[in-house]
Image (cartoon, rainbow, N blue to C red):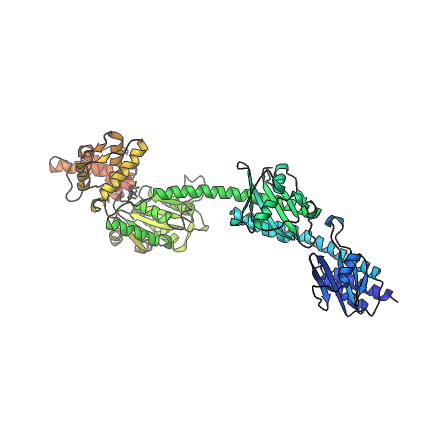
Amino acid sequence: MTTQPLAKLAVDLIAAVGEGAQPFDARVAAAVRDACEASAVGLWRPAAPQWRNLAGVPTTPSEPPEAVPEALDAERTVEVAGWIATPLAAPGGPSEGYRQPDILAIRQPRQRLPMADLAALVEAARTAAWATHHEAGRIERLAELVSLSLEWGESSDTAALLERMAEAATRLFDCDRATVFLWNRSAGQLVGRPALGMPGNQLTVPDSAGVVGRVVQTGKALRTSMRDAEMVDRATDKSSGYRTDSLLCVPLDAPGGERLGAFELINKNRTGEFTDDDERGLIEFARLAAVAVANAQQVEDLVWQRDSLVEQAASDVRMLGEAPAIAALRKTIQRVADADLAVLVLGENGTGKEVVAQSLHFQSRRRNAPLLAVNCAAIAESLLESELFGHEKGAFTDARESRAGKFELADGGTLLLDEIGDMSPGGQAKLLRVLEDKTVVRVGGAEERKVDVRVVAATNRDLAERVREGKFREDLFYRLCVVTIELPPLRDRGDDVILLAEHFLKQYSQKRGRKTPKLSATAKRKLTTHNWPGNIRELRNLMERVAYLTDEPMIEADDLAIIDRGPTRGAGGELAIEGELTEATGEFQRRLINREIERARGNVAAAARSLGLHRSNLYRKMKQLGMDTDEG
Ligand SMILES: Nc1ncnc2c1ncn2[C@@H]1O[C@H](COP(=O)(O)OP(=O)(O)OP(=O)(O)O)[C@@H](O)[C@H]1O
């Protein structure tokens, strides 16, 4: 009589097993109700001090009928007030540890089935469902681990990485909390993150005590449950207001063997105990986690080093000066630094055009990327294109290797194109294309490479005039001068001369290890009345000499006599050239040519350009003036 409903129950339960474990208990309850033709079936778990209703058809309350606690106490089937309740052995086998039985209760069954057989069927089905779920969970865990480790590989923020790992571990191992401890050996401490309920989400414990301390010292995994809870350091629970019932902790070892710390899981959900399987799984998990942590720490170290270098470089860049023009300029720089607009910096030699480019770079989001500079006048015309855009192997006779140009090297950063007014028409055309398309093609190559570079162009020439003369492309000019910053010459900066002089004097005195001397009133007067053809660079060089060549605590006007000997220019400047007009003109030309060659760092072609001469004309002129030329 009863075989048929039992067989049907078995079939129903097997069908439910294949459908996954989550709604499984609900399927069990429904199958039992059908088999017994009962008015209700419920499944309860003793979760002292209360009960938890695992499933019920129709819905049953969390507070069970009286038969349920009685069945638990009696450890057998009982019948009370229309309910038949029976304890069910826990699925999962011995490694899951001890747990009180769940109780199955049936109300008013019209079909009376032998409860022992019915319970055995339900237990078998629940164990099968648990095993299926468990195996699927293991596979899912491995698959997720692989994808997680790929994601972790890209992380450079250790704290965020640890939090993501902990979040993944609580999910994969079905527990309440996870913490990754990093070992600070020199401090004898383990620093755990995340640590819910702790200030800063961080927990510091000594490396000599507690479960985690033992794990890092021995390198062995540790597992505790409610039964051996004395191993748990209760001080931590006390400060976090959280109770640790079960705990699994494994070492975090880098691939090279270095122990980075430990990985800890707290309070296993559902069963309340971590298993052998959890332990094996967490060891696998920690192996991948350790690789990611070691990488992130290395990247973090490098980022820290880079940031402090950038910080250092940025703090060295200071646009000093209180002249209104300089104060306004500092504001403009601040305003446009992050706007990524092309900036054209105009000013005589040595007025600080490079300082402007540096200030723009370090105040922009590009500050961690490179800042490169190319002096377009100092590089022979034939090489400038390769310098800026790179070249492919064999592009020209000397191109033995492929090389990236400055645009590629400055990707993400800033490129200062100094002396832009001296760029050849071919270079100008190519530069315009790069600025418009944001791609470079290396000389002799075909591949277009995307570049993200902010260009700051600088020149000491009147670029608008060069455009009018047809020597500079108008379209390029407008591309470059979205923002124009004009640097006043030093002679127009009033008392800034003194401010800058004192700054340089201090800088070089410190370098030399001497006390910074003071400038006498006459020395100051001499500085403010000098014409400064070489601008701030000239002033800086003078202060360098003074710091090294004098030992006096006070700098007098006589100590600055050297500035009288340099070439002068402009109205009001003292003429340092003596003699008759022809001879003086010759001397002036010789000095001017020498200065331009020096500025172009020996590049005669560039010097010729800045003097407005063709290279061969310059050579002719130099010979005429009795100057040395390398040309035969
Ligand atoms: N306002 C300033 N405050 C402090 N130092 C400055 C200032 N302006 C320029 N300098 C210093 O003066 C020197 C010359 O400046 P910089 O090289 O920027 O001039 P430049 O206009 O680019 O020269 P060039 O036209 O020859 O390339 C550098 O040592 C720079 O640090």
